[in-house]
Amino acid sequence: MTEPAKTPNVFTQAEIGWTPWAQPLAEAELTERHYTGLVDASRAKSPYFLLLAHDPEVLEARTKADKDIFYNPEGGLPRAERELAATATSRHNGCIFCASVHARFASTHSKRRDDVQRLLDEGTGADLGPRWNAVTAAAVALTDTPNNFTTANIERLRSEGLDDFAIADAISASAFFNWANRLMLSLGEPTPAQ
Amino acid sequence: MSNTDLIDDLLGIVPGSHLDLVRRHRSVARDNIQRAYDALFEPVDASQLSVLERAAIASFVASLHRQPHLSAHYAEKLAEIEGGKLLSAVVEDAVDQGATHGPYGNYPAGPLSNENQAGLHFVVSAAGRQTLGSRLSAAFDHAHLLVFRPRDASADAIAALSAAGFSTAAIVTLSQLVSYTAFQVRLIDGLAALAAATVGAEPAAALNA
Image (cartoon, one colour):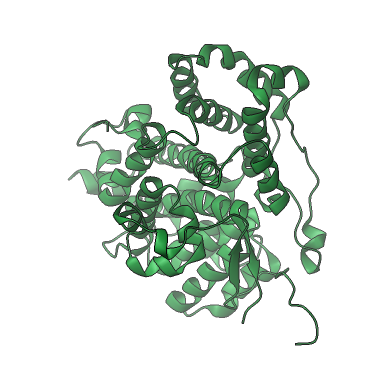
């Protein structure tokens, strides 16, 4: 390396990193209360989760809600499209790190890596086909502040074949990333891929 | 810990209704969204960020989002806490002065710079600071940044909070509080739209069968 690595300044599906601006807990400081908050003991290796572990009760609730919204396989929106909603939300808010992680998940689960990349490159106006456009438009409307989400978004999702369980998943995934984006953006910054 | 569900209360969702079934389809999420609220407003440890500060910040954030049910909820909550009524008018002024539309802000210099979008950089007014104090004023400045221009967040913004007396734990809870409220607003608005669009819709009939 002849020049210092730069902060990532484009949306990417590469495995970039993240570094905190405030001091995470050290693994040696963790008590039972902190491990309960971390939910998975393996998260004690992550500076992001070790920083959030300063408030373990909120972290625990955040993490359990996150997992149910994204990983619960019971009906609702296919995982790929929950990840699409997370990616579109992150793209609209401008969270380069969040977008990178969830774009990779969206690509893995949809096998539509090029379409996901167009969302990152062109932004949320990219034409990704009617169903993905409806999910993306819903994410954008809900992410605007104040939001612009209306029954027209619901009707459009329905016309693309989403039932109400799937629509609720799309709403939850986009709403949740308005939480996650603000945490990641406020507490640290992305670092280059290794 | 309360047994009620705030989002159900605010939206008038009753047991057995269509929206209740939809929410309970992700019951772990439903329960933990409420638990996060309980953890923020009935904290195990309020020593780093007081419940009064939390209610004032949540009231500011909900009102900036113009979510009527949640704004009213947090305004009431603030008024119920000792010292809260004194802050209510200042919160309302700050909401008026901070009203705008997001998300906007800047990206790290590079190809995304052409997506940079200018907008209000809110700071609490001099009059507001007299009532709120420097600590809560710094929290409001930061909350406005996170609500409308999250991509402008910076190490300097964190340093400003530290300088105003916030510990690392307080900064983490503040970030969670603002971010959670931003989530809560959107879940409420999303579910309200779903409820409004549901009457007579076929999937609803199928769910209720």
